[in-house]
Structures are given as structure tokens and as C-alpha cells.
Amino acid sequence: MPTLGVNIDHVATVRQARLTNEPDPVWAATLAELGGADGITLHLREDRRHIQERDLHLMRQTVAVKLNLELACDEEVVAIACEARPYQVTLVPERREEVTTEGGLDVVGNPKRVSEAVKRLQDTGIVVSLFLDPDPAQIEAGIQTGATAVELHTGAYAHASANYDAEEELNTLILAGEQVTSANLTLHSGHGLTYRNVGPIAAIPHMCELNIGHSIIARAIMVGLERAVRDMKRLITG
Ligand code: PXP
Image (cartoon, rainbow, N blue to C red; front, side, top):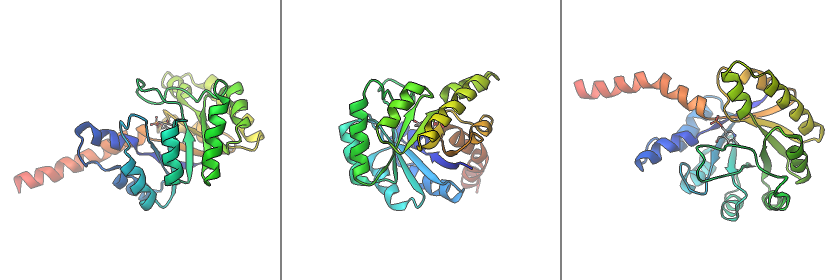
């Protein structure tokens, strides 16, 4: 059975919308842990649009489950990771104009850059995972970097499942999973997974870790809003 890494970036996005101190992703990480999260995932983007270095440093001290830091293969953030030493780093591509991570890492096009980042992180004792599209050429190049794990990008599957037509994308992910595990790398998946589409992904043989953010935070707003309004109403009306 796969473990669940809860991505708390979306909590930080709400905080940054007002440049205030709430909601605090550090609190969210603690609550996710209380709810049974096996890991906390956060993405320190180059543009710092949601998670800040302060969040990483506090979570490094407060999170007791596995801390998974998503990073671009960029000198500045790799150095921050080597200093902070989270349990795991997942290397992801990053473009400033994107709404979220839109595709897997291009290892075929940048083998040296990715391998150097993998080695540097592993030398400080960090487990390294690569976020890749379920594309045989990218996975083969990823295996060659010496990374420990591959996180398969489930975005295309998620998109197809919203249109009730996910069988082909699911088969692609199953084959990609076989390629990853037969090379003795650990298999992770994430992106766009929801309460409705997660089942078949969790059932892929040897699936070890799922990283899920948006759908969990979206549900948290819905299951928590009624109580939040009631608490405010009580303060106003006495
Ligand atoms: N895995 C990776 C590598 C990601 O970049 C993201 C999004 O930050 C996720 C998982 C979680 O995706 P979602 O928020 O769609 O669940």
C-alpha cells in the first residue's frame, strides 16, 4: 500500500495572497500529520510564490514524518536543501509563468545538470526522487542519474479521468511503473490526484508513495468552512 505525502503549498498560497501570517503551512503540516499523513511535501519555488525559507526551516524542526522538498535543479535552491537536509528532495522542472508544475523534468535534454544535482543532494544524505512524465526515454535517462526514486507525473491521467476516459493513460502509467521498479528504483506518483481518481493509481503494483495537495486542501476548505463561519458568528453575536 502506498504512503501519503500531503502537499501543503496551497495553504501558503492563501497566506501569500495577503502577505500575512495566516494560514500557516507549518500548522497545516502538523494537522496533516495528526490526520495520518506519512509525509509532508512542500515546493520551494525560485519565485517564492508560496512556500518561504522560513516555512522549510520551521518544518524541518517540527515535522516528524518524512519531509519531501520539491526543487528545481537550480544552484541556489539545491544549496538551501543541502543546508536544511530534508529527508527527501523531488527534483521538478520550473517555469515562472506556469500555474503549477506542468510537466516532468527533462532529463534527456539535461542529463549532466540533473545528475550533478542528484549527486550533490545524495552526498549530504538526502534521498532523491525525479518527477518524470511516464515516458520511457525520460525514465531511462532518469535511471542513469543514480536517483533513488521516480515520481510519475499523473497529470495526463487526472485530466483524462475528469473526462471518464483514463484507461490509456492508466496503462501508460502501469508500464512506466514497471520500468521504474524493474531498475530497482522506488515508485512514487503525483499531480492532479483527487478523491475520485486516486484508487487505480494507488493499486499500481509496487506503488510506494503518492503526493497529493490541491484536492486535499480543497476538501479541507469545504469540510471546515461551516465551523469557521459559526465561530465568527458567535464572536459577533455573543
Ligand atoms: N507532485 C509534484 C512533483 C508536484 O509538483 C505537485 C504539485 O505541487 C504535486 C505532486 C501535488 O499535485 P496536486 O496539488 O495537484 O495534488
